Each structure stands twice: as structure tokens, then as C-alpha cells.
Length: 64
Image (cartoon, rainbow, N blue to C red; front, side):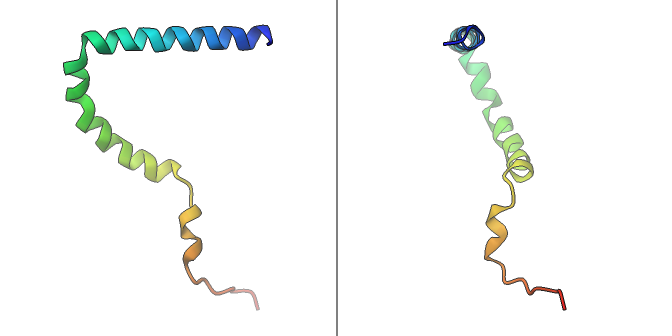
């Protein structure tokens, strides 16, 4: 395993641990933000979901 990957895994593990302890202490505040995060997720999903779902339309080829 390369040194940079080891540092990345160490940093990710540390972030997960810190987030766990912060959420454990402030769970009521985090749940209070949940409806707003859900509302924020809707436009973000529309922006970043891609356009793979539009292939079912019957578009005519406009080239002569």
C-alpha cells in the first residue's frame, strides 16, 4: 500500500470518528436539520443525476 493511500485511509477514519462523536452529542440538533437537508437534496439530485432517464422518449432524427 502506498504512503498516500495510508494517509488517506487514516484521515478518513479520523473524520468518521469525529463525526460520530459530534453527532452523538448533538443528535437533537442534527435531527432538527434533517427536513432542510431533504429539501436541499431534491434540487441537487436534479442537477447531478445526469440525463440517463430521458432515453425512453421517441425522438425523431432531424437530419435529412
